[in-house]
Length: 155
Image 1 (cartoon, rainbow, N blue to C red):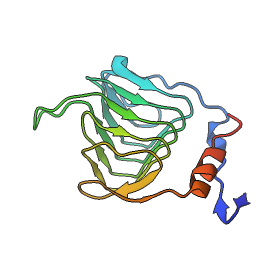
Image 2: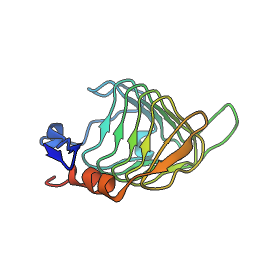
Image 3: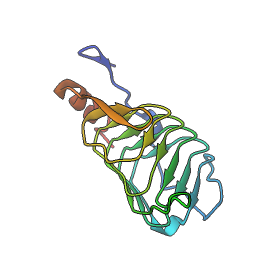
Image 4: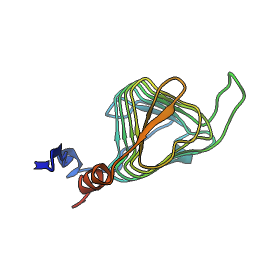
């Protein structure tokens, strides 16, 4: 469906969405893995790409309609630099493939993180950000925000 030049992705794969079975250190049926699943809060209609790794030791909250590309890593603990802290990925955020989210980071609602990004600091809502380290490149327009929100309607 095209709305004002924007192709709405109605996320048909969410029609039969069910909370996945997650066991510590075991691949899910979609081939992503969580350590410390008891401290992972996974919202409804999330889409986590294959070979994504989540270390939730100090808490990871992924809100409704979040999409995470394949081969991403989300860490609430880093043994290399000793940092730890809850990671929050807000409603309808999108994270491109091969990105790395570090401990203590919050990614805002409707925010788009480009592929291969190092998210080592908070990223506000309604922006496009990417890079190593991540930098906000621009704000989303009101039309872009409305179109992203329209994709979540009806679920």
